Amino acid sequence: MFVTTSSPTQDSLGAVNGLARTATSIMRAIGPAAATSFFAVSVERNILGGNLVYFVLILLTIVAFAAAPLLPHEPWPRKTGEGNRIVYQSP
Amino acid sequence: MPLLEHDEYSHNTPGFETPLLSSPGPEETSSPPSLSSAITPRVQRAILNYSLLALLDITFIALQPLILSTPVDSDGLGLSPATIGLVLGSFGLLDGIIEMTCFPWMCRKLGTRRLYSVAIGSFSGAIAAFPIMNWFARRQGYSLMVWVVMGIQLAIMILDGMAFGE
Image 1 (cartoon, rainbow over the protein chains, first blue to last red):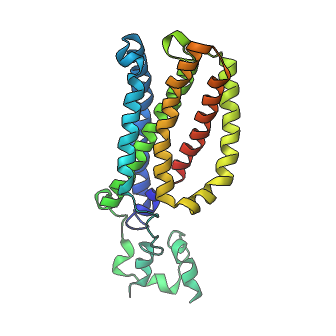
Image 2 (image 1 turned 90 degrees about the vertical axis):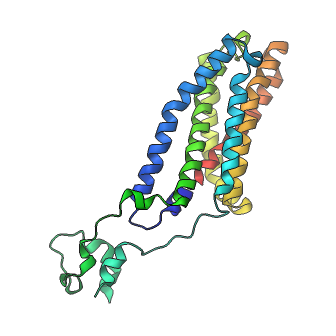
Image 3 (image 1 turned 180 degrees about the vertical axis):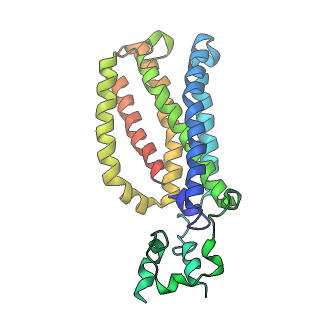
């Protein structure tokens, strides 16, 4: 909802969605490898009693929580009819 | 002007010409906006949040079956694949039903951003449940407490899933 309504015009909706998908795909590519490796390392070397992975993940949660206020309380209002309509309103 | 009702589609239809469209205007050859013009500050903010949510979600989803199957000695829970399948399968079913029915209500009740913040914050509870379950499993074996904490964790995960609605 926030991603689609953040688009500046209707025309750039595709670009915005594509960018969002690219960004999340990169995250989804590195996430599992990083998390499971952290788990393996923290258990093997017994870092922080084998709990390092949980501390890292909670830290990540705090970062994500801190980023949430960058969003408005409700999704941005939709600007319907922008973009394409301009073409037909020309004289 | 009934033609205006269809104007969003008519220019894509070859051979379908209306009197309004046949007069060539200067903007009629407008191209899609450039990628750089689409990246406004609010797009950046929305994508940053969506990326962090995706990273948090996927790390959790990757770790969960790993930790459930790891032996108790190695900080896991040592469950069998069949048990893990049963737990995650029944969770998936419940998750779908509850999110479908409760999400619109919660979104109205809390507001969109606040529900998002609550969902993100609750991830920490779901993460903390892993060492707590291991702690109980080490001391008491598969006692009721292990399953109670797992139930709480799965309940929190339902809330986490609602972050994707925003």
